Amino acid sequence: MKSIQVHLGPRSYAIHVESGLIKKIPHILSENNHGQKWLIVSQHRLMEMFGFKLINLLKENNYNTDYITLPTGEAAKSLNEFSRLISQMVEMKCDRSTTVLALGGGVVGDVAGFAAASFMRGIDYYQIPTTLLAMVDSSIGGKTGINIAEGKNLVGAIHQPNGVLIDTDHLTSLPKEELVAGLGEVIKYGAIYDREFLLKISGWLDNLNTFPFEEAVARSCAIKADVVSEDERERGLRRILNFGHTVGHALEAHFGYGKMRHGEAVAYGMLSAGYISKKLGSLTSSETDLLFETIQKLPLPEIGQQNSNHLMEYIRTDKKNEKGVLNFVILDGLGSAITSTAVNEDLIKESLKVLS
Ligand SMILES: NC(=O)c1ccc[n+]([C@@H]2O[C@H](COP(=O)([O-])OP(=O)(O)OC[C@H]3O[C@@H](n4cnc5c(N)ncnc54)[C@H](O)[C@@H]3O)[C@@H](O)[C@H]2O)c1
Ligand SMILES: [Zn+2]
Image 1: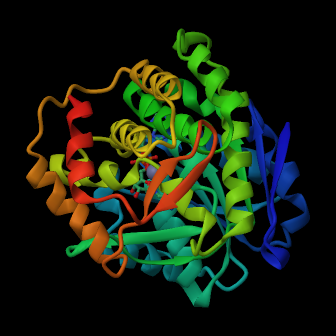
Image 2 (image 1 turned 30 degrees about the vertical axis):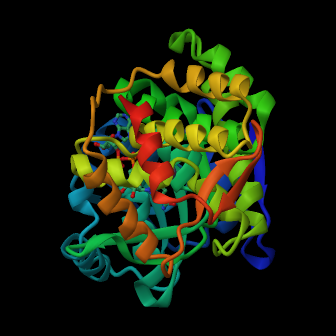
C-alpha cells in the first residue's frame, strides 16, 4: 500500500492507494470508530457494485453503518439534492459524531463533502473515490460544492477529508471514456510538475490494457498533495493545477456540461496552453511535440473547427471571475508551470486552431 501525506497542520491526512484496498478499510478506520454512525453516501449502481460489500465488511467489524444514494450525473450537484441529503441525514438521526464515507466519482465527492462541511457546522468525512478523475483530483484538497442555475460550483466550502482511500480495482468497471477523461488530468500532473513522470505516461499510453494505474494514481496524488500542502486556498502555487483549464472550461460550457467530459476538455485545453507556451518562448518545439504526442495518444472525441468568438465569450467569463485579470497557466519547460497574466486574447484565439 502506498501512503501519501497531505500536510496541513492539524488538518493533515493520508491518501492510501492500493489495488484491493477496500478489504482493509475496516482496519484503516478502526482507530476512529467510537460507536458513531458511519454514513455511506453513494449512487445506486455503485452501492450494488461496491457499497453493499463495504457495508458488510464494516458491519462484521462492529461499525454502525447506514447509506444514502444520490442520483447520477451533474444533476446530483443541485440545491434540491443537497437539501434532500441533509434532510435524510436528520431523519436517520445523524449527529455531530457521524462520519461520512463518500463512495463514488467527483459528483458524489463534491456533494457528500459539502454535506459534511455544513451539516451541524461540519462533521468528519473520508473520500473513497471510484473514478480515475476523483482518485487523482477531486478527492484531494478539500474543495466541495454544488451548482446553482447561475453557474457550476458557485456554492461550496473548503473542508478537508480525514483521509482518502483509493482502491484502484474499482477502475476495472469504469467506462473507457471516463478512464480517458481521468488520464487527461494524469498527463497534466506530469506536464506541470514531473518531466520523468510525463515521459513514463507517454510510454504507458501505447497500450491502455497494461497501463499501471496504481503507480500512476499514486504519483498523481503525491503531486496534488504537494501542491495543496503548499497552498490550500489557491492563492499562488495551487493555480498551476489549472493548466489546460481556461480553454477546457470554455469547451465544457460550449458543448454543454455532460456532453464533453471535464478531463477530455482539459486534454484539449492543454493543447492550446502548450501552443501558447511555445509561442511565448517558454517551451521548445521538441518539448511541445512531446506534450502534443502524449495528449494525442488519448482517444478523445472529435471536436472539429470551433467558433473562436463563441469560445472567447466563455474565456472572458473566467477573466471576470478573477477581477479582470486572466491568470493563464503556461509551461516553463516540461514538468514545470507558471501563471502568466500576459496571455492576450489574440494569442488564445490563435491557439484554438490546434484543437481541430
Ligand atoms: N472538488 C474538486 O476539487 C473537483 C475537481 C475536479 C472535478 N470536480 C467535479 O467532479 C465531477 C466529475 O467527477 P467524475 O468525472 O468522477 O464524474 P461522476 O462522479 O459523474 O462519475 C462518472 C460516472 O461514472 C460512474 N462511476 C463511478 N465510479 C464507477 C466505477 N468504478 N465503475 C463504473 N462506473 C462508475 C458514476 O456513477 C457516474 O455515472 C464534476 O462535477 C466536477 O465539477 C471536483
Ligand atoms: Zn480538472
